[in-house]
Image 1 (spheres, rainbow, N blue to C red):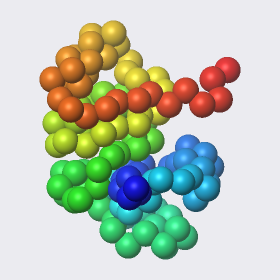
Image 2 (image 1 turned 135 degrees about the vertical axis):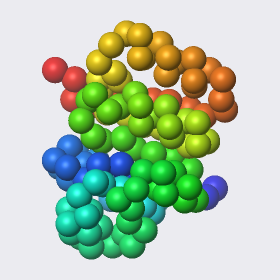
Image 3 (image 1 turned 45 degrees about the horizontal axis):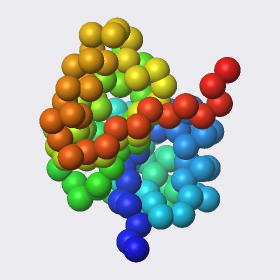
Image 4 (image 1 turned 135 degrees about the horizontal axis):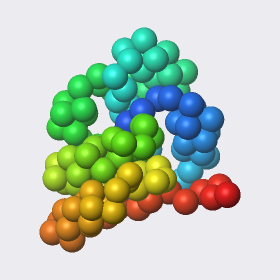
Length: 127
């Protein structure tokens, strides 16, 4: 069985201290691309993890051959970015909370229902 080709959106603290260490240990998934608005941070973290497919443009990131996106950015951006990923045919794992309003979460639910993509909300370390 081939590994799932994953792209990480967001190279900030949650990615650095939780997701990237977990991905190093994970089986069945290969981190192949990263995207962040900060070119400096993106290249620093990419070099640390040996990732050469680096994007500051989310649209170019979604055009790549990744199969899934792990969204680790600020809460207000979760739903809009997850919606774009689903519409681009990518599976999505998004950090909690899913969204900041019930309405936007319902809209995302409708988007997912109309696609073949999977959406999962991370619920690790819920306190």
